[in-house]
Image 1: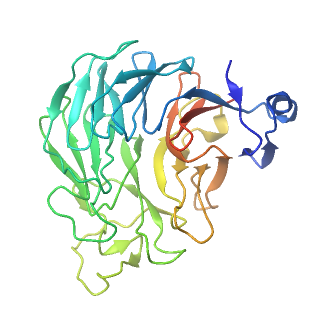
Image 2 (image 1 turned 45 degrees about the horizontal axis):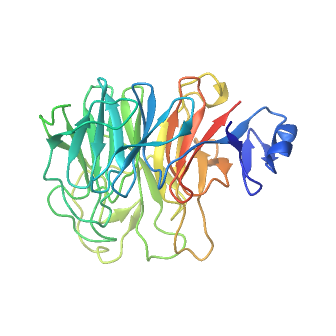
Length: 337
């Protein structure tokens, strides 16, 4: 039986604050009927993907885990990989983005068999070396390749988002000037991706970003973070045609996974973007560490769930409930009604 959220957690939904105490008191205080529970435990849980009736979980260690859609015990599905952070499902196959390659597996309930390397030779540096991968509505795979630094001039494919066919072919760069994206999703055929801002420029600048993909466009790094000039590149002329962010998050919240809600369990969220804020690491007053509903022109980002460790990615189960991974606690949380 899944465990309810512990006493430190706070859920805010439609203006109603529900403070979760011990398991016995949580149900009694949740007058909206919303629940936050531990769906499963998986060491260092990061990216999430639903594939062939299971939830696959990437990590920054060497393993990928799988969990039944009903939750419960996590099984080590694959091991011996280099930082297999990214997981994605396409055409019945599981794709894992490790640091320098993309590997395809046939999913199943136990250990995965030998994987097929469909793409190798990706930039192999540890700084911002956790790859995010997702399948687009065009039937192709998209992979984020972070910049190997805080602020520097990326080389080659560093600081970009690339796209490829499921066999690794038709490989191309679709965005550049991206500092470190660890999340994207699609709405109405358009791709939106988060990007983490630089450190070391104060508590309140530069912002994290939400961007809309324009094929082949430049997104500002290392010249800009949001609309702020970055240290060391203040006077350097940037490439022309820069795409500004469509939304700016508070500096240092570490906006990672994004998911546009599609289900029926939370009709008030349909079409809205949910973003996992992993949280600051060196800000004088910590920020982030929550799941937010991205604001519109009419208002700011709205906290949705907090007190769930350090959120990384967001996924949606077939019943419309929401999964959030937490790499600090090694948990996957389920938000439902």
